[in-house]
Length: 65
Image (tube, rainbow, N blue to C red; front, side):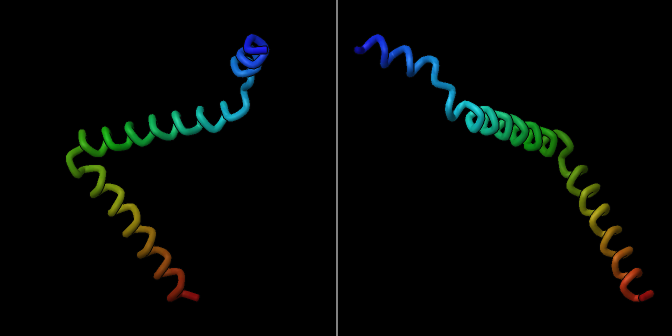
């Protein structure tokens, strides 16, 4: 009886996918934090400038219509 339960536990793969997604998400979060730390604010400025440019262009489109 115990051997059958142990075998089912070892071969059961339900929940494996969500665990893998969680591990990938944690890895990506660590990479993002590392990139932000290594660029010392340079990436923050680049992202801010990109969003500012998009906002300016959207405002220009809204004013033109």
